[in-house]
Length: 213
Image (cartoon, rainbow, N blue to C red; front, side):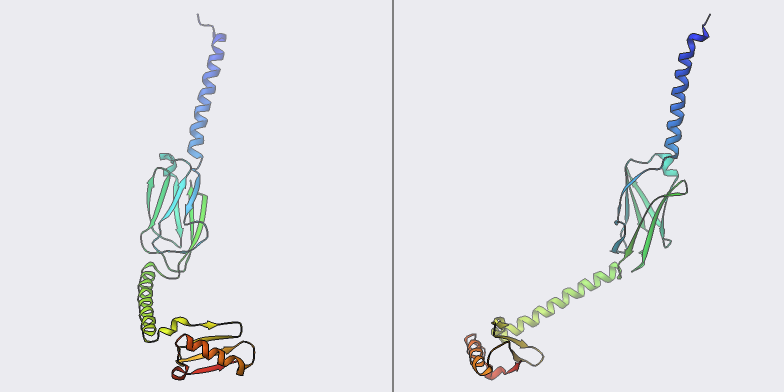
């Protein structure tokens, strides 16, 4: 005959184990996953319109957690979601609007558990590529112009010419030298300036100059 009293400790232990198991399952079901980082960073500026959003989690979400997670981007933007272990990548299905504030919200069981925001660049990624190409072209044109100037007038590389008493530059608008006197007597300093320019093979008679006080 089984002694019921002797079974009480065993039954109590079984009940405790079952209670802990139920509590664990309950906790796992209702506890949301934890986000550890986001990219773009919160309040980022000048984000490109095709930038994917990446959320890193402390642990890989369970199947139950995944079913209760939802990610939204406002203004309303359709997203393609891809999971890789603990990393969630959300890629906009169409380019984001330029110079627009976006709010990202992650919910679990319809309750917000994480939020972030960013502002897109004033120009689209395609416009930035065009601008970059144009800048490269402009830089080349500028370099070619400078090269032509230096070939025609190698003495330009000697300018600006400056001391504590004067500063000499070439004015590309007037095509003349501009001599600024900083201190001292003009009659005393000007011959020194002209001599210094001549030493650099700069012909002031041909180029001409303007005095600025």
